[in-house]
Length: 139
Image (cartoon, rainbow, N blue to C red):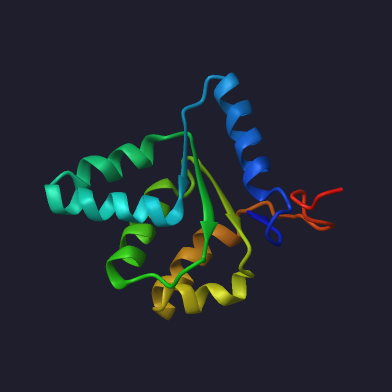
């Protein structure tokens, strides 16, 4: 889990880690969370959701960027839970976020699902908290 304010380099660091994993022969996928959840919605509509979720479960490193920018709808948190559950203890996931973990309950919207997702992510995670000035700040 990589956290920090806007411009601190969360996405950059996640990308570097993903590139390093690729260089070592691992499969990597990088998604903005909102775009990933839009993709799951489209897969559900065209009947390929199970194939898509199976593919996500097999990726060695899944990078989820910008988690928590908007509240999730019911189907979105169910899809996210499914992906996290399928990957738990088998593959790696990086989540880049500005939102403190305690605020995830409000984003996910359902306390039981939030507990389940957090239980699978938080207890087995490494946390990197970036601090300092924005990397986008002009010098």
